[in-house]
Amino acid sequence: MALDLRRIRVGVEISGRLQLYEGLRVRAQGTKYASPTKNEATITLTGMSQKTRDYLLTETSPFNANRTPKRVYLEVGRQSGGMFRLYVGDITSAEPSSPPDIDLILRSKTQASAANTVVAKSAPATTRLSDLVRNVAADLGLAPVFEAQDIQIANYQHAGSNLAQVQALQDVGGVSAYVDDGELIVKDANRPLSNRIRILNKDSGMVGLPKATEKGLSVTFLLDPETKIGGALRVQSALNPALDGDYLIKQLKFDVASHDDPFFYTAECTRL
Image (tube, rainbow, N blue to C red):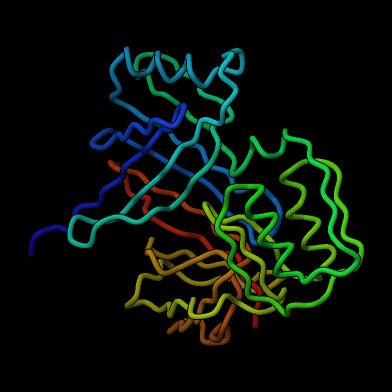
């Protein structure tokens, strides 16, 4: 049987222009949170030409007069099934590694540029939570995903960081609010996203054994396009059936490499 080789593609957007890089040696590690905490990733690229590496180092430097956000896109998949977007974030630093291998290391956080923008917002005496979510999503350039009870919010006001509006939504609505790549997701705090359940067992990609934690469960499994932060896992463990059941994904780590073993998610979950 032919091997279904993995694919990893990295895109770097500078001044509205997207450059895609595929076929390089890539290692990417990051964490997504079902909370206002910014998602983060570190992506190491090996095999770039000196010209390309110097260009990216110059454009992403904090001393560059061009202050528009520089974004990095990470897409992964298999040759047979195509790729899906795993992560999007604003580049916060870029640096070369030490010889003999001259790598380019990109560090990024989701919506990092919005954290440095100050806004002042107010709403009418009473406003629906869904309307506030749409307004905040527009401010951040995101698509709104609203899956919470639509309550009335009185006297909403916010003055501070643009990104801090996500925390404000969570506080005033008593909901779970967070950014996942290009989406602003607001949902009921103890409920998973609808139609987002991943059945996980030894035949569907589970790696090793699930481990009990203080808050629920930690489990590692192969990357797939269905799993989403804030979604659900249905764990079916043959060797540790006491941990079987449905869980809410609160933290989702990823570790992928083009020329090494890692191609995994590690989910930190609470039991539903």
